[in-house]
Every structure is written in C-alpha cells, then in structure tokens.
Length: 395
Image 1 (cartoon, helix red, strand yellow):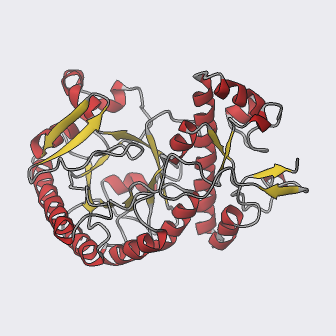
Image 2: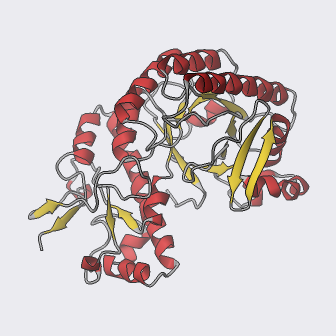
Image 3: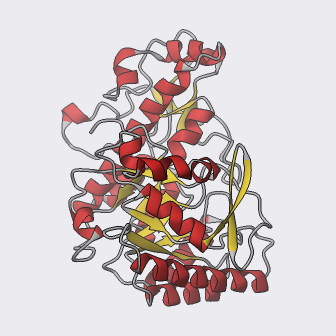
C-alpha cells in the first residue's frame, strides 16, 4: 500500500460483521483494500480559506490531489492541545497558528459543504477531558453536544451538497460513567453512521478508567455502526481499546514520534513464515527502553521507539528496523538519520515520517490479521512482552 501524505490516518477493525448496509458503510466493507484513510482536520487554516474552496467547487479531495483518499473531517487536530474556556451554547472554537476562530453550526456545516468529505464528526463541546471538570460542566457538555448534533443533522438532511456524506455523532461525558452512558444512549437514537468517542485522549486518564468508560459506552451503541476513538495511538493503549470494542483510531502517534526525532521500532509480526520473521529480535540482544514510560506527556518518548539523536547511533549502519520494507529502511541507515537530526536537516522528518507511518500501518495490518485468526493474545505478547519493545545489541 503506498504512503499517503495526509494529516492523520485511520485503521478499521475488519473482522467485524457487516457494519451497516448502504451509504458510507458500503464503502467501509471494501476497506480491506484501503487499510488506512486520510483525514482532514478542520482548523483555522481551512476556515480562513473557505472562500477559495467555495470558488473551486469540487471539494478538498480534488483540490489537494488526494483522489484515492477517503476523507474524514474532525473538529480539532489530535496532535495539538486546544485551549479551553472558549465554548458557548452556540459556538465552538478551533485553533491554528493564526489564532482562534468561532464556529456556529451554520459556519461548521458550510465548511462541510465546501470540503465535501466522505464523513465528518458533528460539532461538539469536547472540553471536559481534564480531570478538573465538574459534574455540572460535564453534564452541560453532553447536552450541548446533543443539541449541536440535532442542528447538524437538520442542516445535513436538507443539503443537496452533502448527499452521500455521512455524520458521526460524538459521545462525550468526561470521566463520569453516568454521563458517558447517557451521551452514548442518546446519540445512538439519532440517525448517524457511526460514533466518535471523544475526551479519552492519551494523557487525560488512566487506561483502566478509559477501558471501563469505553466498555460502558459500547454497550449502548449498535454493533453495526463503527466506533472511532479520538486521541489514542500508543500501541499498548490501542490493543486495550480494541479489546474494549473500538473499531477506528486516529494514528497521529507516528507524527508525534517523528516530532521527537524518534523511529518506531516495536515488534508485531505474528506470522510463522520464516521469510516474514525479519523483525524478530536476533540472538544476543537485550531490551532497552529509550526514556521512561510517561503516559501523561505526549512530548516524551515511549518504549516503542528509539531516539536517533543519541550519540550511539552515529556509527550504526543498520536500517531503522531489520526487515522493514519502507523507503527509508531500504535506502538509509540509522547513522544517516542521526546525522540529519543533529544537523537539523528537514529531510530527517520526511524520512522518519515515511518509516513511522509504514511501521504503524504494518502494526494495524498485524492487528487485523490477529483478530481474523484469533491470535490477539499472540500479538499482545509480541508488542508488549519479550521482544515487543525496542531491542539493542549489548555494548
């Protein structure tokens, strides 16, 4: 599968039975050939250039040359925390390098008509993921999100420009179980194509609590509609959330690793074919985690990656990951990436992003295979157990 240079990627759990007959999910049933999807993040840049897209008239996909890409519009960039305190009963704010812009439902839906995505999340009040949010504020968030969804659906159903485009309802509720259940139950009553589980992003809560909340929400949602989880991308957390019933993920995790100057290097191959076992750790290696395990700071590296800025890589002439077939690993060595990083060459980020996207994509391919062949436990041991984290030769 070719590398698709768009902002964010998604992957779907394909072992599930038919998601829904008709419309968007007819396309979803064919996603065995398209294992990750492009995502357009609505932020201030797109809002400011709305007039250009309106004049172009053929939507963002054709405007950007992403002809074979499935586009999904979400409200915020998952890799960039948004300031809080700017949401009202009638508006939400999106942020970019230029500042803040307020969106009403009318403005939000006008953007959808201009962008013409395959599906989009409805407007929502998602500012309750912080631990300090009160029960009253969380309840207001759920009420506002449901009101925004009803308004979005009303405009959507009357719009000829949005024929064939689908809406995902957003489930809020912070860390309060009762509000999560209420939000899921009420959202499921609306005519939406799927569900976005919002406010559960990495660093906002413990994985045990996240799993508990996801499990409770999934019980209220129909099995034949996909569930997208916002803001979770670490391999260990992805595995836990898949077991809880999540179908789709935002894969901004490769981008974060690239920003840190790191290469994803965890193992995930569950094949018994010796020719595909190139990622198995060779004899005489020991596990070495570059950095401490820190779930609450997305700027800190994780045990699933290697920090190529470290001096020990300056004369390491191996590919980033043995057996990886990406362009970077086939043509360059760790020492070269180290050189590019320490000299602040822009090519470093390009090559790292190619590798990290390919590696993460491969992980989701292994995840789908594990689910289809009932080998999820094997994959978990491969990713999290012996050989699952970065391995290095003894010095």
